[in-house]
Image 1 (cartoon, rainbow, N blue to C red):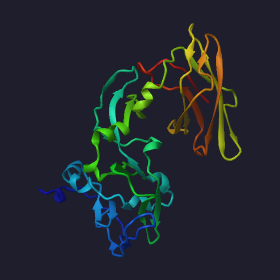
Image 2 (image 1 turned 60 degrees about the vertical axis):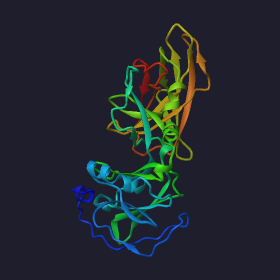
Image 3 (image 1 turned 135 degrees about the horizontal axis):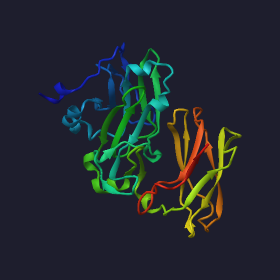
Image 4 (image 1 turned 90 degrees about the vertical axis):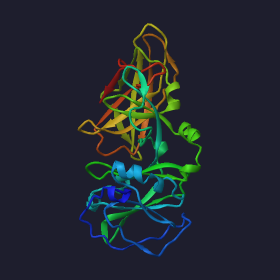
Length: 319
């Protein structure tokens, strides 16, 4: 059975019309020939023609050679029934990211083990996101065109659609055979933290964080956070040293959560003072630009990552 026969095609009730392909000014190719998707899916478009990006695991393996060396000047077409819903925020539902190389897994006790998943993985780190413009087809809202703001650098990418249900992911390479794999992996290296709520951080961040035993975080009560002018949120609090030794003040991590406890925004920030004596505290504040409307609570805690492991006992407070 050939790769095409193994392809897993999701048949969606789409009225797929001719989709005229024409590059925006940032791309170096143009085509007046209409593109008609044969089925729902993710497609890359270039001067070489359309290339299907998504399929089941066997199809992904069998067709990788077709997708690993796409040209830098690409557009994408997504045909997916879920996108017909006018309430779907296309900027949130459609993302293009560089793939990260997962170096290791670090559990809540600081134990480090090799990655169990594939070495190349999608992450939500902002540094891996590629700016795109997403446009819905006026005559068929279930079809959208995705235009990167510039030509893509050589490397590995994932186009992801998350519009309810399981995410649809199309992985591909841009001139991948010509890339120095070791250098690229080092430049895109991340570690996977926590078993219950996994997240990723750049590999370099592991050595920058200091041990923080005995530090507790308290948010200012009752006004832990408040909206400021310009749609910003101000969060204030203190970090106290409850140990008997002087402590280095580590990076703090803030989270905004929705009513169901889901983290809708996560960021890191530093306290102006770099150390705190026993029994003393240091004030901190952080400002969040454009906080999500569904954020109802704030959590600030010592970053769970340490040079010699994670700190299960580090304090945090939620408002």
